[in-house]
Amino acid sequence: MFRPKDNLERLNKSAIRMCMPRIPVDKVLHAMKALIYLDREWIPQNDGATLYLRPTMIASEPGLGLRPASEYTFFIIKSPVGAYYAEGVNPVKIYVEDRYVRAVEGGVGEAKTGGNYAASVKALTEAQDKGYSQVLWLDAREHKYVEEVGTSNAFILIGDELITPPLGGTILPGITRDSVIQLAKDWSLNIKERPIDIAEIMEASENGTLKEIFSTGTAAVISPIGELCYQDKIIIINEGKTGKLAKRFYDELLALQHGTLEDTHNWLVRVG
Ligand SMILES: *Cc1c(COP(=O)(O)O)cnc(C)c1O
Image (cartoon, rainbow, N blue to C red):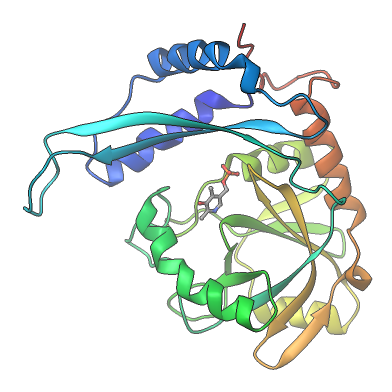
């Protein structure tokens, strides 16, 4: 398992925000190991394929009142998933969304909760109708600062500075985001958590300093972005090809997850 404790602790943070009960992390981790062992035949053996685990909590008390429920059900969905990039890592086209917003300050944007996905589907389908695979979200107040890419965290390489927006309550604290930040520090890269204006990206594209954009999340690990459409301007990033840095993070994380690199951060947990 890759960083299961960090994921369960985040689930607890989300639960607190949603007035749901917390789970006992060590006990659940133990239960997850037992469950994976029971279903071990479902663990895919082919390259890049994984057993995806999704611990989930829902209110399960019948009733109509608006208040925290008195009964919740916690369950773990397991599903074998094929290699995310069956045909190799390919950069995606992203639509910069400047009307709809994903999350507002004081809202639930930093919690992993269903409502956040519900709020995002309309923008996603409109972007897909225009030929884009995802949206890049901007902040709700000024519609200019980069927040996230779909349901993944954003990284932008301008010159030698690798920038990711800071967690300020509206951004989901991705475990993959955290892994990338830690690796960047290990590699002595110039990594900054700071607000980044979409205008800065457009300008960097124009003056040739924009090197790469990629996003991070558990399923795809690293997803390079080859094209951005903002208002009526289209920019091509790194000639539409996967950037060197995105590839380096991708290869390193996959090797760590598959146990072919030494796990110096203690990110892996043995199941059996
Ligand atoms: C899950 C998720 C991420 C990525 O988090 P990981 O822990 O890296 O999988 C980023 N943004 C949103 C909105 C998410 O739901």
